[in-house]
Image (cartoon, rainbow, N blue to C red; front, side):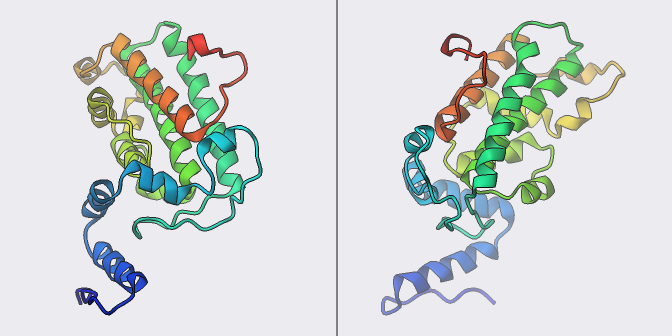
Length: 225
């Protein structure tokens, strides 16, 4: 039965619960659109963060076990120390997997696309874990679909609006299909060149680092990302 609209005499909390119930009754794509269109990045980061990202980067104590007032009931978000630590590991792994591509190592086109898919998913996962998504939930509902991961990340404060990255994510998804030792003519249809993939992936990694406040991996300087 559709959720009853809240009247003016009802409290704001009841109105918010009614709105959340209405959102739950829609399909997942409609839910995600609701969050993205109705909530600004400033509102989202204000809801997710106990303190600003800059404070986390300085190593000050934060109550990561506190529940988060998520803008909808798409998935319960809860920031934890474990999630924060796993987020950092994912970001550093993304940098590690990206190094051979960025340094110009020779890949078959399909192998390069698979490697790029790993990097992009690790980077986006670092953001999702940092804002409180559960890793098991992501595995079940996002899987190897970079386009889904990018949608959820941008809906929860990543705010990385890059048409080229979006096209690449759509083309690669699910990125596991590029893990094939046989030559694939489909790989040549990728809308981005090697140089474009490098630029857009580096931009994403930079953005994830800015939003999460994670330090660069050891051995990397501001000059090389």
